[in-house]
Length: 574
Image (cartoon, rainbow, N blue to C red; front, side, top):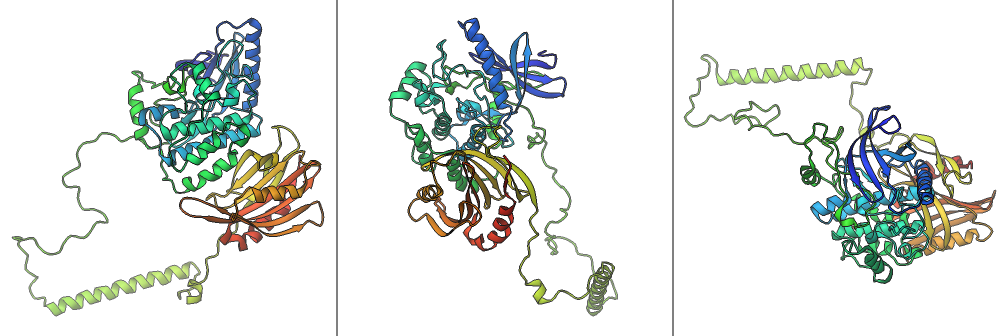
């Protein structure tokens, strides 16, 4: 029992710096995962204290993350002075296991993984957290389709160099960024490399660098060798853009998700079928009544694996699809189908047919049938009239003008939402409120590049992904830059012919501009034209860009229904 609350049940996985347990929270009555921090051999008492303190600081930072693609951290407990990290227990398999058992992923599966990991990293970077070890072994895929990133460097945050003072490798050699492997500072750009290397493994079926040999030799290849190129395919340019040697040349997360969207838009609803989990489940099923989740470190993540994977056979999910049960053969005669095809009225050959009742002629039979039909129609019409009268509705059918008129959609329901576009999580320089359609989902990420300083982007996206409100905050933008710099960088971010400024006007009441522009997004299935209405303005030393983007065919109605409705409600509160 840890901290008088968490009962350890079985080991999920273990590595050189930690052991992950399947446990049960006796207070809240729920299963959890508990990571026990192990001290590397040879560390001094001072280094051990430093590791414990950094573990606690890292855990406190990660605790602020609340994102559907991030494993949730519940608690940090102490037992005999040692920290234990309590996390969400997700019945799942790691991406490393799925690739090992089933080979490379399809383009759609890899795109789903890339989008989920990019979303998780965007939330982390916005909170000032760098993962440091993005790899297939730290990506969990559940049978119900959830994809989550785990293990945010809690046990490996010993120093900012690739090799710690005790000689332990920071991160997995096969997925470590070149600048980190060469001893430079760890920045969010290192996670972009890890995402690219993870996608490389997903589509190729093996890591970009040899993880089975000497870790130091692998690191040498990462630093001095050529960057491996993925096989030609829809994701190859994206992977290449992420695995750029220079950190500043790597594709920003927002653009990663933007390029993956056309693939996901046409992807099947179920990407990871039960068959992908059945094989691994059969290999790991334990002879216990509790069916504990078991795991082992993935073989393809290299010899410097720092932790086990939270992945294995969870048994049937509480809300997921049930597994097919064995059953006997179908009955030979199930009886008449309730809505099946009527039986053929013609008698089979050799069947005796009863004679018609005596005394009834064919003409009399026809009269009886017609009378029955008339009675039936009369009863039906009478019932219809009675129902319309009781419901206070007109008996006459609607006119042609009524039935052929245009469809009038229900009015959109807006609600007040709060956004966090601060440069550092918890800072008070970037919070805001705005009215947004109630069913739109919020995403937060960091932006860099395009000749602009680092910014925080908060997006509210409609359920079908076609409409979006974007709030982009550039802290300390002035006086080193001006609004014209933003407009020029915006135009430069697109290739020739993919950006067209339709209108631009200066604001009368403050330093800023309003714009309307159209962009073209290229995709394998064709081009998509989008229209953006934007307000860009100065507030203090910050630049704010608030925009609404819709398909171009909706631009006429969207300005009134969305842009003119949303913009007046936007208010910076931080």
